[in-house]
Image 1 (cartoon, helix red, strand yellow):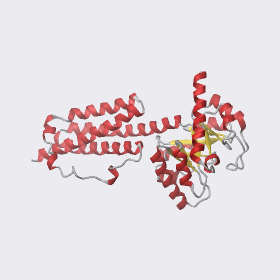
Image 2 (cartoon, helix red, strand yellow):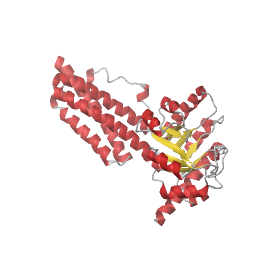
Image 3 (cartoon, one colour):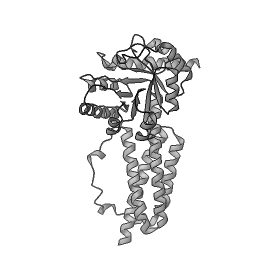
Image 4 (cartoon, helix red, strand yellow):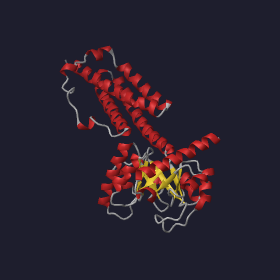
Length: 346
């Protein structure tokens, strides 16, 4: 009786771990087209299959399993691919922990193997979440930096409906309680639309809502400190106004940089315009994703593209637009057109 129960526990958790890995594997294969991550998922599944013996399978008793009917509301809906992956990676980790402990009662080697696999899944999780975020960052051409307006969530959602995939929450004046409400709302919106969500300056708020990263100004925390707090999988950006600041940000490990302000802007009242020369420099020398920023709107952004920008960040052009969805679609269509022209020229 006792051994049969052990086998049922092992069988259920071997199934759970293998199923979770297969779900993650499908995204690595078809969503990310990443051979290394796909192979690691497959190897883990095959190693688990070796322990899923006929003897263990024979102990299965699904009709009498009280857990079959158990569910939770959070399992019935996934807000995004990121949420789906995170849920299944946690599922695999929990199952491996069970296999590690109960496996010792059947074969100590199973416990040892599952322990090592659990550590590999932790590494897989870090690599996967980092790769997905950074791949999306590399593919993103339009970046919205918010301003503290009354209908913030409505405007951001309208832009997301237009195809926006990167949002930064920036608010230097509101109290922290209000900021927390806003970042929670924006985090949910970005999850729903599959967009990256960053927080300006405030690592505490970014951590509170599990944001995808932070954006730091020149006077903010050092990138190394932010990286230690956020971990390797998160995105860290840095504002730069000249080549020296760009070189320093890249050397310190910035995942992307802002290049500007291209034009004078009330968002940065004490910053002189960097102009087109800095955009041209970035186009020739910047090895990480970079976004031209500062006073860019529908009237001048084609000029910014013509001098070398392939990505732009905007504030007022969308936040103060009468039709944020249409403005977002216009920016994206022009950016895509420019990208196509560059590809054809090369």
